Length: 117
Image 1 (cartoon, rainbow, N blue to C red):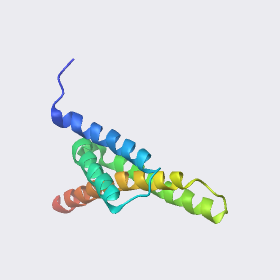
Image 2 (cartoon, one colour):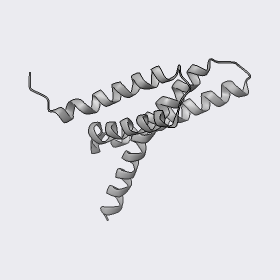
Image 3 (cartoon, rainbow, N blue to C red):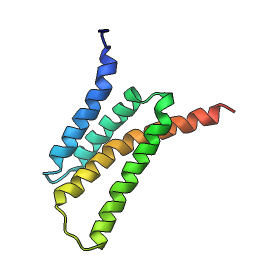
Image 4 (cartoon, rainbow, N blue to C red):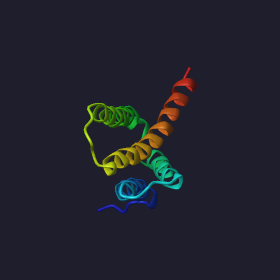
């Protein structure tokens, strides 16, 4: 088995740590620093994990997740169904993690498209 570089291990680790923090933080009252930390981890994930070839699928999956999380929250709220606040916080936390990485990747894709002409 080939040895993996520290950089190739840091990206997946940042994603898993981000998910664990998002899950654990769903049970506490969030602060601004929580979102900053999740956003930083999302940027690390975007920088270290997503190649140019993976840009399209990553952005598609990110958009699908964010739209679905927001849509389901609105639908459930509008329907008058009471769901635990922890589920709403979990969706918000993961949205920050995924959304910050998606923002970075989208900006990189826009830059690549703009400079190619």
